[in-house]
Amino acid sequence: MSRGGSRGDQPDWDTTPPTAPQLTDVENFVHGSSAKLAEPRLGTRPEADPQLPSRPDRVRNTVLVRERKYRISEAEQALLTTVGAFRAVAVNDLLAYPYASNPRQFGQDLRSLKGQELIRTHRLMVGGEDEVLEILVLTREAKSLVAAVGTRNGRQISQMGLVKPREIVHDAALYRMYEAEAAHIRNRGGTVRRVVLDYELKASIYAALAKARVLPRVDYPKVQREVAQAHGLQVTGGRILLPDLRMEYDTAEGAPTKVDLELATYHYHGAYALEKARVGFKLYADGPSAARLNARLTRGRAPVPEGPGLVDAILSL
Image (cartoon, rainbow, N blue to C red; front, top):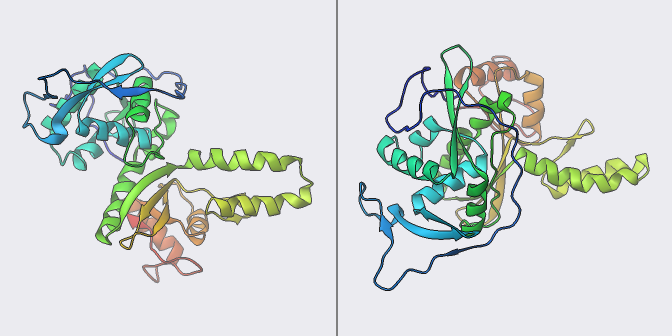
């Protein structure tokens, strides 16, 4: 879990007072949008950030979405896409990965996006009294903008708003798990194409199973297996087990494939972790939790769990 620091600490990239945010109701998704790049006038050129080197990813272009103009650079668009893909991302993780611990550049992008009402910061008390988790989420306008300008893979879905605050520590850690697995994929010459969150899979599966509710009970298991297979999943104990995160990527040879990831928490039971591993999910956990679960699964005898489909130990974040 990423911590944003102690209560009252003010990072040098931040522009907001150190007060805990009010948690609002879940915002509704925005469906459909239309956008176009504003046509530059003759003799003009895109505006670069005056305080940063004029690299291509730092140049801001004007984007028109639903009659509103935004000034967005490639780096800022990438930040919005990342936050939207995972719904909520911890500030510390963004500083550690895409911004390579560069708080000044992060501060420039964050101020611009917040000033245009495209991103929101939430500070949530977690764990001890002075422990703060600082996360970013997209606004309604940002979701429309990301959908309008598109990404390298148009199938990537963006999420918005703060959902289930009680689960935010787990949900915000999904991005860190993604970065750990993405490093393995890149080292093998692969390229990540998109990520799919568990509730995206759940919505698709439930929609398919809803049609089977009218079938005789004896026919339901067959339909359930077919739906699971169509989604690359398995049925265990009458349930379709879902991963926390699915990463779709191309191998070094260009073949499309996927990996399903599960983030094991401290409260995970060994049997539940074993069940997830046996259906092919790759498990990650923080250091202490990984050591504890590995010891339970292997009974302290081996670094890799035994059993069908168990090809990886629980990896430590």
